[in-house]
Length: 235
Image (tube, rainbow, N blue to C red):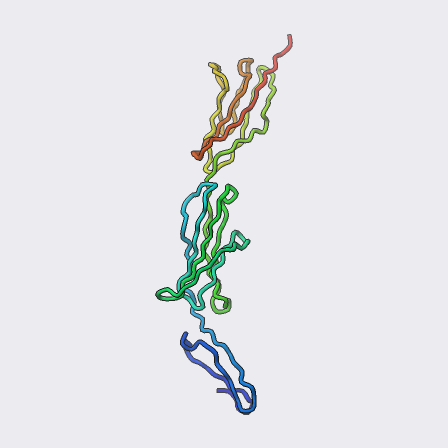
């Protein structure tokens, strides 16, 4: 089809199938033939699928995840992203039953800084105007031991005044906090509220070293100490 008067000659294929894919040659008397490549795009069956380690993973262990896409032609190219950063990983492609299958795996040692990281697998067939890229994502949940930070490791309080001993904790999951005095004592050690130990009216017997411990079930437990110095009023 075309317009011979304008030297336009076209080949139109209705309802193209994969059998129509290939190289086509246009030739005419006196001119060099010209080749054109036809790619028949078949959309993938759906978004890629992420499999592998599920649920919370302990910090320090190896994370293994695989991303697979089934169907589609050309077979989608799979790419992993950590947020917006691309992750280099080997890719395998083969012709499975019912269509092309591609898979890509990542393996990395996990740290506490990976908690909450969004990993995304993108399946791209290379023809965005015909088949937009498809994605699948997973958010990492990393468990790591509780750590204790003491903002004021030493307090000096006038006898009879209130004292507030504080320790800050970080860990996943959230930790249970407990306070204890480092020596045996029958004195009331105050009340614990969250990460603070509040003594409303200190006496000289309250002086000493207090330990804050934080345990979230992931060993080891975190510990920190606060030294309380009670100042007496001069006569």
